[in-house]
Image 1: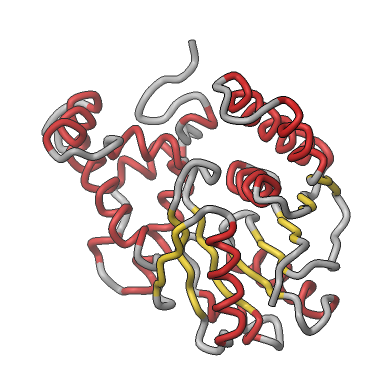
Image 2: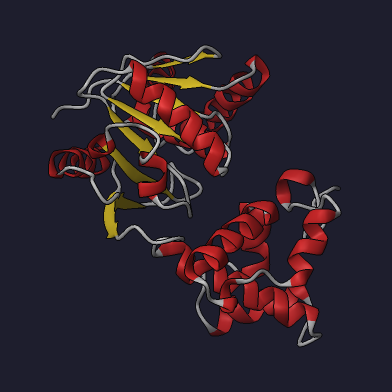
Length: 282
């Protein structure tokens, strides 16, 4: 199956990153969100990213304009695409409602993919009536830069759906990795304990945030320390993923450190709110 037209639901950090990546691969893409301000902000983020590539002489001004020309934005739900990628809020009920609607209004060939970072694909597919067309495509942040993408089959995902998504991932310049359909998949089963232990080390006074991150980077050769990475992802997102894994896997090692919940409850979500483990307000 050739994928020649894509729709992305969600214009936030992940959604606009996916839309940019699709457009850079030469595929027309529509980016949809519930408010005009959201899609405008998403498109502005894409434009800034492309401007940086022009400044670094990675692409020309003409190429930037060609990429932007492949992107349309909308606040109305649309259904005419070979592949629809969902990148909305990480909430099972919200995702199920969207997938049920998409399944009822798309043709039989449309693949429905979720960028969920933790919710089992089989649960999402259960709302569709055609689970063979549902698959997980868990991109990494920032999407245009990170090479990996987790491909997750639900219990009834067809071989044809899987093969089409793997081929598309390669066309997007990604390296697809296979995960079975368990809460948190592979990436977050490794990543979230790393973040959680960083929070515990801070909470228990083992060291301060700067040195926890410094030691992770210089002694463990990690590209980012656990606390600065949590701030980049969003502390609310981290807590949600840990809660899903804790409930789904029944293992207390995935329970969020209370320090994480305290920060989230205070509205300190990381970079996006201006404050998390670090203060980003200058």
